[in-house]
Length: 219
Image 1 (cartoon, rainbow, N blue to C red):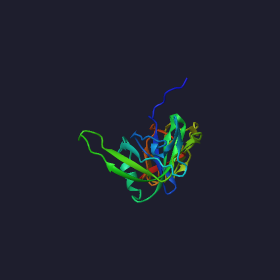
Image 2 (image 1 turned 90 degrees about the vertical axis):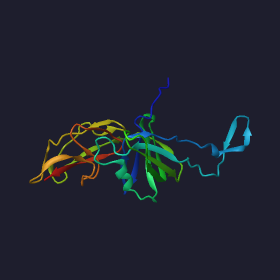
Image 3 (image 1 turned 180 degrees about the vertical axis):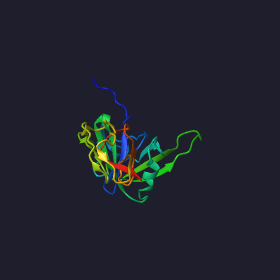
Image 4 (image 1 turned 45 degrees about the vertical axis):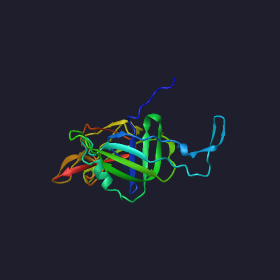
């Protein structure tokens, strides 16, 4: 029996300088598939439809909405968009873990900060303009979580790593590492300069690629 699935854990990431950076709290996702204008209506035989072979098969623009500043995040989707060249072309990864597939989409993009009720959470609408056909790829990988002392000494290990794609990771505490002189542990961050996503011990996130968490030290 086929079991229904939802898009609840769908995710979107963009590759910037060779590193996948994920958008958080994606709220709506687009349709992906074959566009009707790729069908040759001149050679129909009863219910048979023939695809035009010599037309590039590019999907229509793909529109995502997400919270501008996700809950509890030091970084934000707004900050991530500002890191991107507005005229640039990027690789985007659109994942549907419960379908067991993801798409790599080469695309340009546009975005807008949404309006609405003053009491509503501010949203961003991100539109991808594909430059190639989005082909689906099976999700079969496991992903590792690595803790980096980032100038300190010692190690923190996660006995559950590697994780299945989309699994929930619970962030470890700093037991096992020693701070540099005159510094104390502040938090973990996906960037060694504390410019990525910050996590405290016990925080949870879903994993869709290998993740390194760097110790951040305060004076």
